[in-house]
Length: 322
Image (cartoon, rainbow, N blue to C red):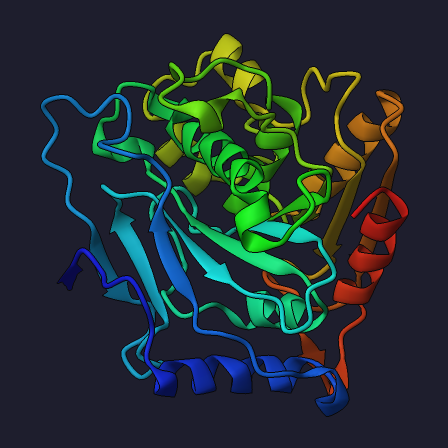
């Protein structure tokens, strides 16, 4: 277990991250990138932590796994991993990982997915967000505070990173898909008091991508673990309604891409079907893909070939402004 991480990665770590990306895309698509930067998203302590003694902690996801294959069961310092584009095209992606709201499954060196999209020309920002079980005052809205702040910060510093503030997607995986859906539908919800000029920016993504997402908090399709971690003991009908991501989609919901594997034994594919039906009912531009296989986690490569989901998402996202 480790407390508070460093701010940059080593050359060896960068090469290992680049190797992951190389496995995900044709060799011709891979170019060297600069080291991954890590930055806090708040200028001081995050909101709602008065009296708490939360510390940043990591655990290995697998005893025999790579050194950076870690998860964070406690987060005191929300961060962004900034994975620079190999050949920038001006677009950016806020990447929101999963972990069932019990932990955040993200390393420090940039994931394979982040490096794969960086190789396609996008600057990728991986979000390490806080968790409700640590007692933050905002409760289940704590992760949304961090997601909103991250999007606003990226927009505020767009010029510094050489990206177009109007071309920022958000993609989320598993419970991160739930948080991404809430960011997309609740970007204007006041969840914290502004702290600096970055908070004058919009938190609305240009386009959203939800991958094997947790969506509903309602039975029978709710992911029980995520619901328990997010909502705690209060599962009243009103609370279920409020935190079910398919509910009350606004007119300005960003165009949304949804993908799931039919054989996902962790989060039921019905979550994606429910979300797509809600998007269609709200007349939000949307696209759904249910792949036959993939389990709980669509791979970058399958049987020696690139999996189609990154290209399908990119095609959809570019059509809608990314």
